[in-house]
Length: 165
Image (cartoon, rainbow, N blue to C red; front, side, top):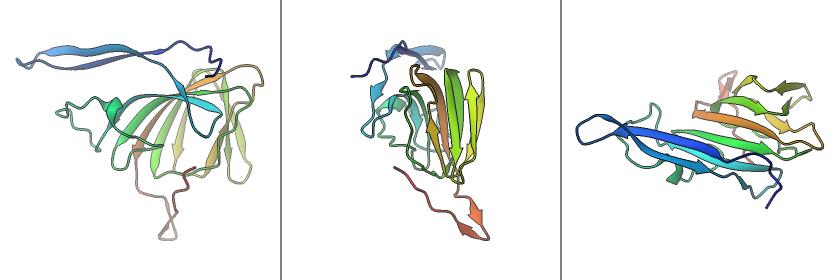
């Protein structure tokens, strides 16, 4: 267990009743949990099995095994980066939207190019080889990530391979 200072995520999911009227299907709290490779806590919010998503799919999106991304689908998760943590370098066949909710996160690309993003910043990650670093040695950083499957980036007609940690 980490000393994660962030509160749980409140998740509200809508749907339809038997009369096709809008209803709240669930209103719950999600706690982030440490991941196996360390350095961060993940809270899976929702997944879809396909893109475009199917609003007739009654499965709770949290019940799917998402991995880092979901083949042919989409994932939204909250990632709480521990102070000083660094993710492995990786590339996925997805377009990712990273919304910095708290703290700062550093994006480093494969050639060492770095940029720091703070609260109220959105990062659009388009299938490039990258890693994430929390530059603070004392504070957590919280980022919401939406990952949507996309074809691999093709360089000179050849798709770049995925590299998942």
